[in-house]
Length: 314
Ligand SMILES: [Ca+2]
Ligand SMILES: [Ca+2]
Image (cartoon, rainbow, N blue to C red; front, side, top):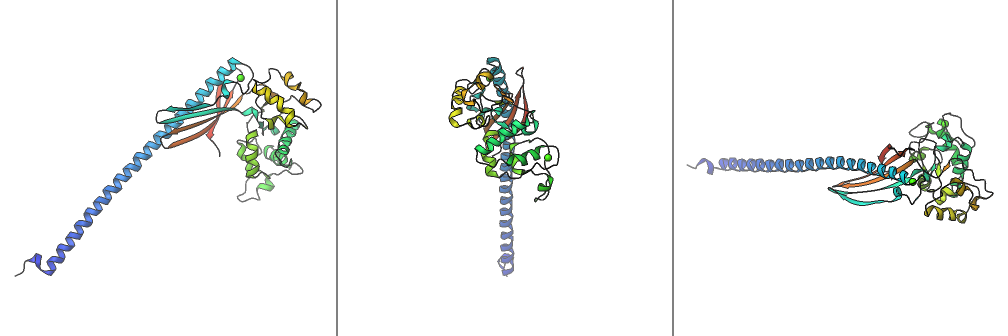
């Protein structure tokens, strides 16, 4: 008599048992691998959360650093120029698990787009913006659609303005903001503004929700050229040289520059100092890379507050 295990049926049973056993072991191994890799993902996720938290803390640290620099700067002098201590770049410095770097830029070196709405001398703001558009090779009519976007009413500024009628017809439809810009990138929503125009305007404009002056000690050549009619590059050369040497101490010294002679320069909304600065902080911790911009406001007593904090737009 054959033993059960050696019968064909018994061999089949043994084979089946073996396959089940192999399957069970494989499944257990798969489950263990899945658990291990899940654990690794969890560990990485936790590390990323911790690094993100750490990066945010370094951004706050960067703001505190910038606040101290700006306070100290006001003790050093009453004007703001490229020679000031805030204008120095903070080179990458190692911190636990990564590095941090940063720089402060004077926002008032730029034309504030919101001054088209908020300035006491809107006509002058308009002239300056038209000159900037012209200088960059754009149609001056772009000022009309921007004014309509900013102003509270829904009356179209002729000839090239645009209000709800323009934007409600778009896909998806939206309304005119009818308030100051919160960000320069908002231009992309406005009639006539393409990405190429936005990119070219960006270095010379800002969007601060207050009536601000243009600081002639930090303004770029392009912005200086908007201050009076028919100015040429060579006209503003001596001003740029003066900026590099620490700027002007009095407004008279600036306006008396022969470059402006007979060119209708107005000192309205111009200044030698600034209140609004933009801090850009770059933090690298582990796999986290954060680039954050903080809009800082320094009052006349040197007190610095953070008005806005957001990721840098690219
Ligand atoms: Ca200063
Ligand atoms: Ca409007």
